[in-house]
Image 1 (cartoon, helix red, strand yellow):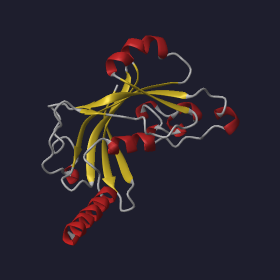
Image 2 (cartoon, rainbow, N blue to C red; image 1 turned 180 degrees about the vertical axis):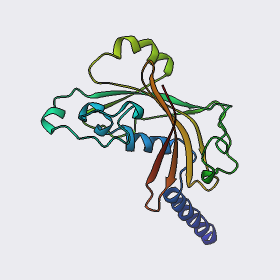
Image 3 (cartoon, one colour; image 1 turned 45 degrees about the vertical axis):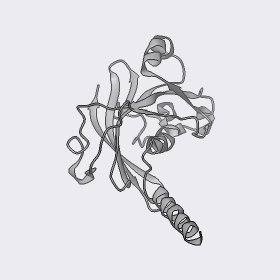
Length: 206
């Protein structure tokens, strides 16, 4: 009985170490990306003067001058719409369509995709995250895209993990308006402190 208890304790310790030093095989890495890059006031292009250049298609990576707090406080909350599912494209191969030094061994798509739950993300002042489907978003798009605070539609595709769980790759599409969207490949690496480091590589802009 003691041996069994010790064995269970060892398994729990190993599991805990893996949880800190590697990504779990679920959508947490995408949630971490949303929290780090989107669920922030800095994602709002209205706070910058001048605004981000067209090639950025958003505030990620923009280093422009931030407006004064008195102006930012008067802005209505940024409304960002996020696709509630992560789908897989059979034409995407993580080991052919990504940089060679980010090889993901034995990567396989998930049949039927993955549900993306953002309810657990922290609510931030000035940012409102709305979970929706692509179909529902484009139904209401004509009535919301000109409203103050409209922040666009975000969707994710083709989420893959490395075998050791220390790396992940997925596609990130940011749709602001017609003829105004971009798609990037996101490279995620687990750090020793348990945090994730994200690098974006833009693959298309329209």
